[in-house]
Image (cartoon, rainbow, N blue to C red; front, side):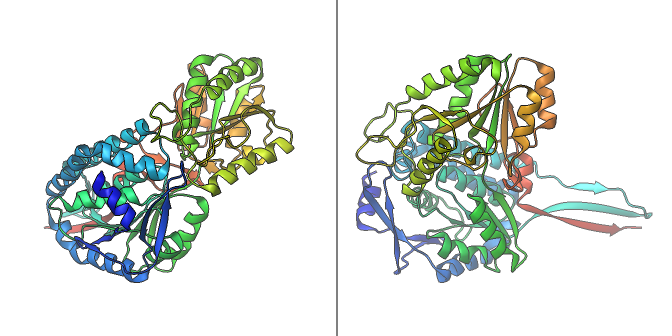
Length: 486
């Protein structure tokens, strides 16, 4: 840990390109601790030249990497996951300092990242093709899967270490090479990750990491003709810009964008379970998670009881600087832009008639981008707070009179990532899974996907998906072979 701290002070971070740490010699980006405002590092603000160097390195070695048996590629991945497990506390401390995540969750992120890499490595012996029946005598048709080539992985700041693995592991096991651009808000964990990769014998150029802004390095990577697939997680606005840049080269994109997840609480639900699950779904990572519950529809006859249970949990939330107090439920928002956005949305909701039950203002803490856990009632479907992504510790609640009304309001959204319903009626639950127009529906549990599932959204929540077999195959393209053999 001391080594990384000294590098933060001296600003000695270097891009990892073609198996080497490369000094950029150019402008830098300042990195701050959102809980304390402390300057904790300066990283390269990479430009088009550094991006081009990384892409060319990845492209040069990709054919040799593809020729390796998949199980050998998987063995390299397992060496990386082993390094993560040896450095859980170091990585968790870095994540907490630069992103504001509470330490227990940061440790979960590191361990889950290692598990995810191992899970994807297990697919090495499970990559499948097909034999297709031919109309011609003496002909066999084969469908095989091949790697795309060079993948650009553009990483967000909310789960920065895990998202490296979510893009790198399926890319590498299927025979691609990758260039990762870390978020300018949280790049330090990616530099630590690259150092651990460098300690393995992964062939040079297979994994590359550059830092920089979205307007600089991100734009250069998205428009680079040597990139075959862009995998991005982040906002709708940035996703649209990436699609526009990729369109110039007809580069394929995989985009996980925003969410406005509804949680439906019906009168027959276990209200204690529902309150806890909705709370957990909203407050994980201070509400800065794309699959977080973002709005609640509760049946009128149990609305008061549910709100009371939820409000008690929100009032009891412990928050502050995660590195000065280990016994916390929530840290700060990632930056002032995020804090101002949340505060502005709450104020506009209040002016439109919403009632603040708990919270409703920035926290009275001298340092850090802290916002009070907030519950809003008397919300309506036409309010901004019920339609736009909040990305903070705020839950707007609307009262409904039936499950039909709740499903209709839930589907009336430009987003379509996750959803949930709380009911003890099996028929109602199954009906909801048919009628809710979202990529995921959780029944009587919190929003949090499994690595063996398929995390994919509809509408403005994105294109393509991640995790499981279907997420793995996002990093491949098909090849049909027609074999005439007598």
